[in-house]
Image 1 (cartoon, rainbow, N blue to C red):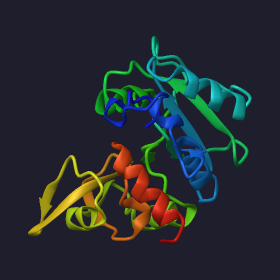
Image 2 (cartoon, rainbow, N blue to C red):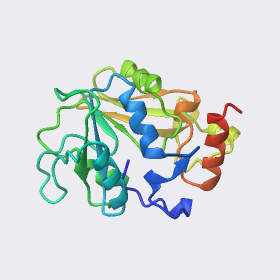
Image 3 (cartoon, helix red, strand yellow):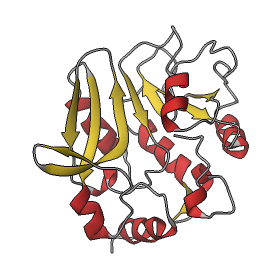
Image 4 (cartoon, one colour):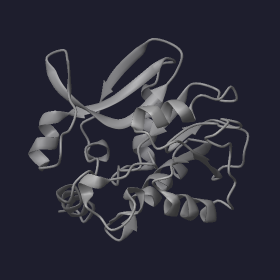
Length: 215
């Protein structure tokens, strides 16, 4: 997700550009996608993140796909990725209205050119890596997939837990990684650190930096 305001962080820059261990979070997520089996990545930005759009555009020769006003040419959304014929490593940038995660994702996925299933990834996952992305692809069985982590694990680490749901008696938190497909939905649970930290508050950055440093 590259279009969020990040107001809870209280940062002096757009949320995707907030640095964790010296590197913008959006770069970390893009590097994870580039290191995975994903063939194409599409970053959905919004009016709230013009500098993020500029950064990604420069990194990708500004190959813009579509426009939030007419929906033309959209391929995926908000750090989303899909298999495509384009050269590996290319990423496109799309504009969304900036009306919130769900609304922006729906807008980004609403074009007829999109070939589902599509992997969607939030841009606030600084511990994500290519191997973790590939585990999600391996877990996908053709329908839609929600990736979750045990809420207790997040609390043990001392990171924020904003949304939870129950599954088979276990309290889970969405990881910010999903597969949007046309078939029935399912949930898979991962307990490793790659999916555990969504940076929403300053203390989340501190924990992420400790884990990245191997502490």
